[in-house]
Length: 410
Image (tube, rainbow, N blue to C red; front, side):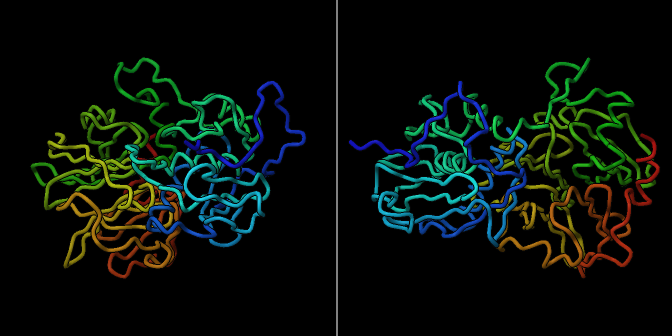
């Protein structure tokens, strides 16, 4: 029986850590893209896989990655047999060598398209978990060597699903690019069981809001008196604010207001027709009615339905419709509350369908003046809901007038 392995040769030795004679990217912001897609999956699925694995390496280092179609640093290619790398680097059909990658600053990352690639972790009949191999080969493209630990992502031999880098893998990565600056902050004296990242003090709340630049998302609810209440999510904290910008209640841990909801949600929306709040994080969605989790939730969204990781969501209401839109880094798509999944329409580029709006938005909300407000960093954009165009004079410095009283109180 043939043993499936990576075609790269060099073995990493932890006792020889040095940047001498090591190929390394001399920058921390890298681009990636495809030279040739696999025949076996939709392009959108492949895009999602590699975005996910590169985010894993980014999480453990100072590296940041951006997709590009023009001359990317890391170039992904699926091929069969001889594919231009020379006789000794040709692929060999199913089994044995399943992929290889060239070190910086080449960036070529190649996969044998004859393999029985699978996206499922439940592998059968010789299938190979593509995300695990993608994580391994992109590690080589970053300059990582093989390790002798069979359980590590960077082991030369493929054995099973491995999507978590080992300490040895992370050690290699940190030797080359430094440690991630993302540091978890203790909750101080907060009660156990709540995944809070900061204490609920004036200073801590101000840190979470950061002049309203820390807003993750906003939703507008109506209470029994039909009074609009704005829920603002920042980190693990929920602020409740009136339409005049005045706080209506003491800030609270989001998981306490919405039981079982994890901290640091990525997007949130309220849909009036179902009277439900929807929260999105990674590939999961939570649905609440009156802050009670609906039976059957959270649900996992299939990978092929998500082009990108959610960053913001918006309930967009016009004279003829009301829709939930989810925004990723560069694209947006529609979420159907009736089928609990994306609609049949294809994801669209933000830049082509929201004129004047940038990528990588932080949050969005349609205010009571019917205009849509998008937030990014220290600026906000005011957009016409039907024309989907940024109004003249925008972006403007945070916060918008209706949030000024609230933002200036911290």
